[in-house]
Length: 104
Image (spheres, helix red, strand yellow):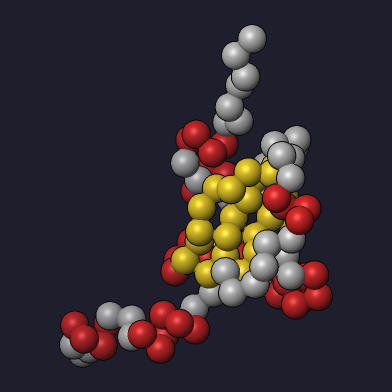
C-alpha cells in the first residue's frame, strides 16, 4: 500500500511532465495548435486567425491525441503541432468551442 506522500507528484515528476500552450483556430472548427511551454510561440499562432485557450498540464496534457509519435516529432521539428480532433472538443470549456460573434 502506498502512503499519501507517494501518491502526490513530486517537484521532479511535475517538472518532467509535458505542458503545452493551447490555441484554437478562428477559421476552422475543431482545429487546434499546441506549443510546449518551454519554447517560443511561433508568429503563425500570434495572428488574429488563432486565439489562446489555456495551458494544458497534468492529465490535460496527456490526452491521447497529444501523445502520438506524430505530435512529438512535429514539436521537435517545428516547435508546434497542428491537429484537428473532435474527441478533444468535449474536454474544453463551452466558450472555447464556440467562437465569439461580432456584434453588428
